[in-house]
Image 1: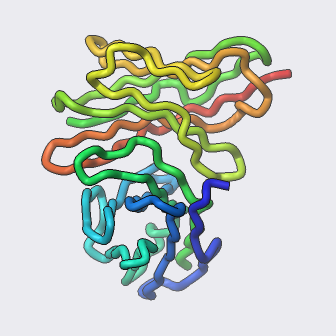
Image 2 (image 1 turned 30 degrees about the vertical axis):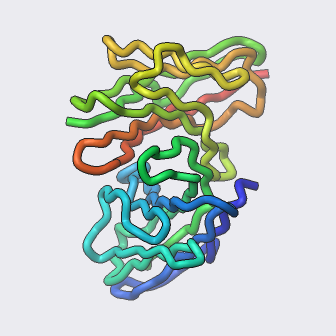
Length: 116
Length: 115
C-alpha cells in the first residue's frame, strides 16, 4: 500500500458527460501528479501540483482540469468525455520541494474510466 | 525531440539469473532525471530506481541497478537474481526541465521470469 488513495476505483459513464476523480496524497507529501494510461497512448503525464499551485503541465487536454485543495487532496475533472478518454488514471504523490523536485513518486491504485 | 525508447516489448529470464532491460533517451536538456517503474499485473505503479544526469555513479537499490551511459544516452535497468515476483511490465521514464518539468515514459518491457 503506497499510502495514496484514489476514488472511485471504477467509473463508467457516457460520451459528453463530466466526471471528477479524487486523489489523497501520502501524509506529508506536498506534490500531486496525474497520469493517464491507455492502450493507444501508453503512459502520459498530465499535470503536477505542489502545495496548491500548478507546477508542471504535460499532455493535458483543454477539456481536462485539475486542482489541489488546501488539505492537499487533488481532483481531476474530465469533461465532454469521448470514447478515447477511456483509460486508467493514476495519481501519484511525492514530498516535492519547490526548488528541488523530489524524485520518488508514490502511485495510487488508479481509477479505471470507461466511456461508452 | 524528447523521447524514451524501450526496444524490447517482451523478455524472458530464468529465475535467479540477471536480466538487463534496455532504455535509451533523447533530450537536449543538461539537467534531467531517469526513472524505472514496475507495473505488476495488479496494475499499481511501483518506483524502482532513479538516476540524475549529474550523478557520476550508477544508482543501485537492492537487486536493481541502473547502468547509466550518458554519452550513449542509455539508462538500462539491471535486475540481479531474478525472482518470480519480478514478472511485470517495466517502464523507463525521464524528467526534463526545459521550460517546465515534464515526465516522459517509454512504451514498456514485459518481463516474464521462468521457474
